[in-house]
Image 1 (cartoon, rainbow, N blue to C red):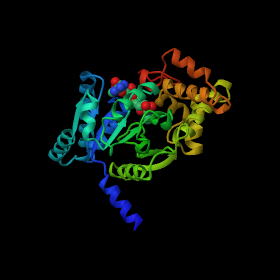
Image 2 (image 1 turned 90 degrees about the vertical axis):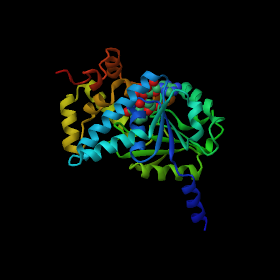
Image 3 (image 1 turned 180 degrees about the vertical axis):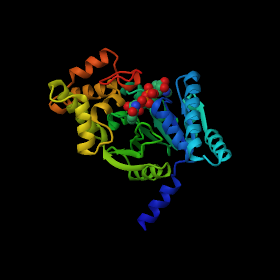
Image 4 (image 1 turned 45 degrees about the horizontal axis):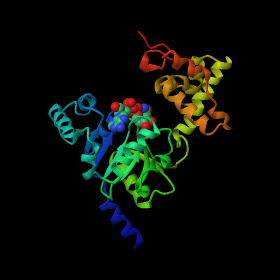
Length: 303
Ligand code: NAI
């Protein structure tokens, strides 16, 4: 009986209207995937210029996707794109849009005080039912939630780049996240076509907690001169079955991102040698050789 009541309450709490705060790399992907799967999405940004760019990039992504998925039926493809876009609206005033929101998902700059300011500004305004979530990669969900009263309705929803392609969603529970919030988010993950795993609120959750030390150890191998970048990458692809080598992957992720994650963890957990700062990464960041996105990192991507 309990389980039947519970699933009814979850069904009632189902997520339909979503506010995505931050329309950058991750927010635009999250908005796209949510709208593609029938959710109404409002993207909130700092100004209209960014919103216009976000909207345009979602449109281009959808068109690229439709061209492949509806190869034989271009009219259906066009309908898919326009229907998906019709479910996306934009705003610069979060307080106005959270009224109808079942879920507010934050994907703004990775800075605790900026995230605090955001959630504080909407905690008293959003309806009691609204779930708040953060897409943070390296901050503690519990610490972000600390400024909110609705700690039972706060969780982490950690997506992977590129969001429309990567199948995984990490659902992070803090000790205060309620069972109902957790179940609602796990069910929602399915509706957007992701496979969800559950993780406690620990640094890096599952994927980054294992991946960042791997990248760091690979860089330390390079620093010691044990093997070349190319050989490390070939070794892990052919010997461990990884689709990308760790050095290639570090270039893809961006050295600014990995460097700030490692430095942040080192500050918090100075006794853990896996999180020791990496002089080589710092040097690449100082030289603005951030990887694929700047055309150069460990490898050179300029034609
Ligand atoms: P981004 O820099 O591409 O986008 C952030 C956007 O947030 C910018 O467009 C900025 O104008 C906007 N913004 C900043 N403050 C705002 C505010 N107060 N209200 C509304 N909009 C605001 O950053 P990205 O890469 O999309 O990352 C966003 C979050 O997602 C971060 O917390 C990051 O840790 C997390 N994340 C990033 C991943 C990645 O591969 N880049 C992967 C998984 C999580």
